Structure formats: structure tokens, C-alpha cells
Image 1 (cartoon, one colour):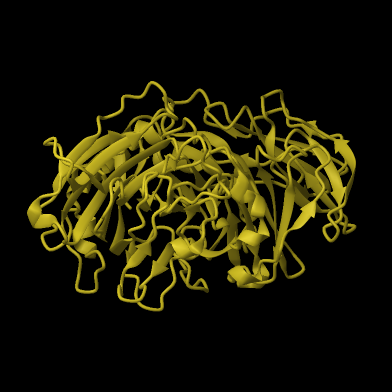
Image 2: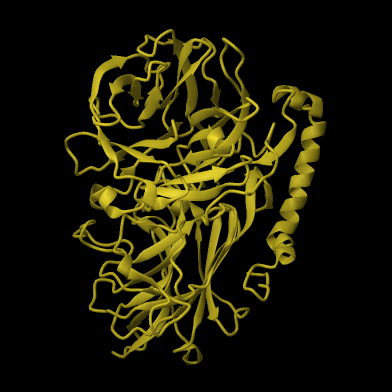
Length: 608
């Protein structure tokens, strides 16, 4: 809202930069920068604190939106390219691989999990925090490896570990059927490490290391080497070999505000490992930092030998109450002197480091993570690969430019709505919902809807979704009129599902009978984050997009934590019969998602 598209349907860059919600926040950012320099931390002191060689500024998070548990590598043989993967839990396609040449501009290269037959058990996972947990990505002898774990409460025989392999990280189809790796201790967060003799090892949460055969999946010789400094949930292990030492880096204290990064080392990969006397390497606990929950890191070098780290963090401040985008990926520089221990820069919104030159020459047709969505569903097009469903869904539910309806996305209704009922069976019952991540603190999302409901409770609309028990919806639904008549009329309905977040104030459901002048017309639905705490949902005739009817608003508390402690908000469109007999499809067109601003510190929002 508030800006005008150019003739190609792309956001006008000047209007975008001077978006009214950004004018005062940019001034606030400038003021804060001045305050920092005159309040005890000089430019010289800052440079010393973040290592003298760091000379370029960048902004965190570099993978904004729900991108938790990063694992990253640098592959010189692939034209000096960095690759990262993050957790996806129930989202499908899953296990995204992002590529970058400069550590700041990241593009979706592929999704390692892109076919339902690769992992049928993902569709059966019953709990909202089930699914694909933290992965480790590594490269060796021309092949890319991603080792990961599946948490599914229906599986009672342990935690499956899966190894995905490809020789082309830019091609979804090249990712092979995963090898099942034995997991003797049934722990999560597997790491993959090759010793100098070529033997492969897997470390998992809690401290055990196993030797494995990556071809057969066999695992043996469980070595319990180090389980941290005493914090709960010692997770996210990664093994590194440097200067004749084996280093084991983990995160402990839980993935909330006590999250910490710790490290130990040994003369042999089989341990025992001795912890660093100055642990933790890094934490945000007991601080007033805006970036909290810092942990689950991975270390790598660039072509010049500079050391870098990626980790997850939550933009919440120490209150840790409002964080709808969940755990995101941050970048920070580090040093690691010969024979010593790594030294990590603290995580901030504005960071400094020896970045490679800016370079957006990354192969493939994937989506740049900071770019807007401008999707017109042209004939012959496929759906963007950064869009996801909640668990794998039948692709026939979503069709771009179906016959007779060019330049639309047809969504067939599911029997269950986004919340579903107690008899919902994940592998058998559909959710007709397709989405993309909220990737900016402030954003505008609009989509045009052509929908002619015929029977009671047929509904189609837009949603901001964290889990099936926490979402904010605006739909067009067929309901009885409110004058006591049995006649059905289309109505705009704003309602919030917050059963997954007890104690949060939930706005009342709003019903607005559709005006006669709006019926059988294309309606533009809108969903905007007008601040880091508030979403506003509205509607307009597509022919009069500025005449917006505000229907409802809701707090970002509703989609922070609760039944989605590991995930983040996604937004998109849905169609449902709400348990009724409806079969009427919905046709969506002109999908626009526009990032407006990123909050990077207390009171500081910069253009997205």
C-alpha cells in the first residue's frame, strides 16, 4: 500500500525507498548511529573490537525471515561460491540451498527435498514442530552433501538420519534419493566430517560421534567425546580440523534466550575433547541486544582465508515476545589464529567484515532472498521454487494459468481449513494453502481474487500463518445473511486462530457483507505489516485499489512462539470448504509481495 507499480507491474523503486512508513525510521537510524559514536564507543574502538582488518559494513540478517540452523560452506571449485542450507520442519519443498558470491546477496539455488517420494514420512508428521531439523552441508571431491534428521512423533524406532547428495547444487532434480544413515543414539542435528585418512564421522546432539559409511549408511563405534559446559540441550555440533587439532563446536542452553556457542578440542577425532577455558565463544544471553538467541553456528573461510560464521538469531530484544519471523540467519566475521581458539564478533544489526566484492552473478533462476514477488502466473509458467506448502500437498491443488483462466493461480478447496479438526490425518487430508516466508519486518502483500462461492462455508483468502493453531486470516466466505434470512451471501471474514498461544488477546471475528457493487468482481486482498508488532488486513475492488476497506488487525504476538517455537511466519493464499460440501475453485492473480523495511535494532528500521 502507498506506492505505485510501474508499467511492468514492478514496484517503483523511488516510491519504494520513500515509503511513508520509512521516512521517520530512517531518520531514527541516522540519529542512533550518531549517538553510538558520541556515547563511549568511538569509531576506532569499534574497529578494534571487531578486528582491525574488518573494513566493510553489511546488515543482518543476511538470510531474513524463517531461516534457522544455518550450515554453510565455501566451494572454490564452484567459482568461489558460498552455499548455505537452513531448517524447514514441515515446509515443502524443504532443505533449501542458497548460493552467494559476496556473502550479502543470496539466491535460492535449489531445494534438496523437492519430491514427495524422497521422504514420504514428512507428510505423516502430526505435530507442528515435527519435520526436517537442522542439517549440515559439506563438499568433497565434486559432490555436495547434506546430512539431516527427520523428527516425526509417529516414528517410534528412533530419529531417521538422511544423507542427500548432488553434483549440481543448482538443479532440484539432481538431488538423489537420500541414503538412510544409522543413528545409534537417536539424536538430532547430525554433522558430517571426513578425517585425513578418508574415514567419515557423524556427530549428533549430546556429544556422541560415530564412524559411518556414507554409501551403505552403516554406523558403528559410538564415541562420547564432549557434551558441553553444562548447559541444557547441547546441540548443533560441527567438527573442524585445524593446525593438528580437532575442534568440536556446539550450541547449548536451549535455542531460546540462554543460547550459547561453545567449543572444545582434541588430538583425535574420537576424543576426549577438552573445553575452551573461556567458553562461551558467543552468546546474547543476559544482554539488552536486539538480536537474541544467538547460536547454532557454522564456520567457514573465503578465498582469501578470512574466517566467517553464520548463526541463527531472533530479532526480539531480551523481552523475547514479538518475533514473527522466528529464527533467522546472521553473518559475522571471526578470527582464528594458528593453534588458538576462534574469536567471534558479536552479532548486531550493522556488522563489519572483509566482504568479497559485490557480485550477483549466481547461476540458476532461483529467487534472490531480498527481492519482492511479482508473480502474474503466465501461461506455461511454474510456481516459484521459494513458495512452500505446509507438508507435501498434491500439486494438482495449485495450477498456474488453467484452461479458461489465463494469468491466474487456481486453488482447489480442501475439506479442512487451515486449523483443521481433531480427525485431521496429515497424509490423507489436504491443506490448500501455498505461501512464501515473511522476509521483512515491514511488508505489503496484495493478491487479486476471483471467487464465486456457491454453497455455505466455501472460503478463499489470504493468511499470515505460523502453525495450524496460530494464523491470521482474511477470506471471502459464503454465509447466511445477518438479517435472519436463510439466504446465503458472500462476506469478508477476518478471524484469528490463536489456540496455540494461550493468554494472548485475540481480536474478535469481523464479518462484512460484500457490497452489491463488489459481487462478481475481482477483489484485491491486502495483508501488511505496518510495524514490527501489527498486521492490518483489508480489501478493495481491483479496479479501485486505493479505496481500501480495512477489515481487521492483529498483534504479531499471535504468530510468535507458541506451537511454532522453531519456525517463522509465512504468508499466502488458501481455499477451503470449511468441512462442508463446497468444490468451487478460487482464482488468484497479480500476486505482489513487497519488502518495505527491516528492523535491525531497537527503534531502528532501514529500507528492506
